[in-house]
Image 1 (cartoon, rainbow, N blue to C red):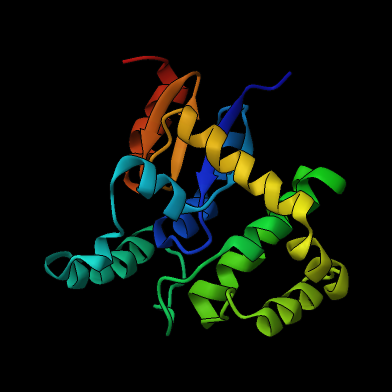
Image 2 (cartoon, rainbow, N blue to C red):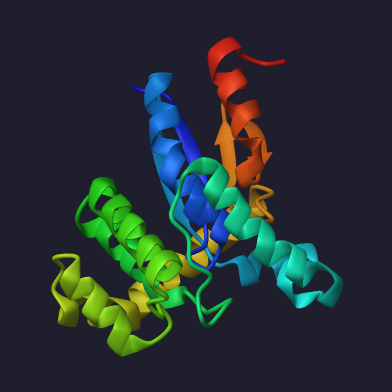
Length: 201
């Protein structure tokens, strides 16, 4: 079995969006695959007694500038969404529906489409009509996607994933686990690359 990089993300996290754009290439260079986990930052923040950096007035302007700068640094297109942050449970439930009934690749394609829609075109993933339209544009059955995000089974699937993440010590996003070693943040890329190339340091 090919070793994995576990990658936890929230669809409302700019740094998760940026990391989603580079993590597959990093993994491939080192003979790894990526195992994605859609979670809700609100759940992890609550468990860790944290808040979004933009909720602190002293951090907000810096954080907004750093989102865009970090995207430029990675060569990733970025447009600060008109509404930010947003609840992302419906997009995450679609991810797990695709992951479990389709394939991890289908879920990864959805993650890429949803991230790019929100962070380059301000598509409001929290709006049901916008989310259905995005699902259709992404080649999904929009009605089936809507049914999935309203289905108690997929609500429970996401809740379970949040609980599993918290139990594993995941307190933010993006969060990576490589050979049991945790790395938090888009800015951990260099450390992840070195770990993959040379092992523990």
